[in-house]
Image (cartoon, rainbow, N blue to C red; front, side, top):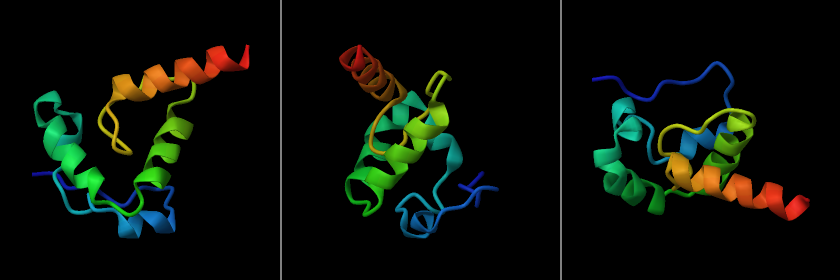
Length: 86
């Protein structure tokens, strides 16, 4: 079992994340999205996590469950914001 590691680039909010110590693989398994959503729903730093995911995914295809959202949800929101700016 692989757990979520401390990344090279580290922000203090990650200390408070409910997902710390969970299996890393679950966040990339579509069959476990409900489990991920439940963890994110009780997390104090879900907004920071979502902002970090969006920042890191700029120009890339989103992958995995982060910030309380699936990759598809984050991509849809990013596209909507891009259209709104035009």
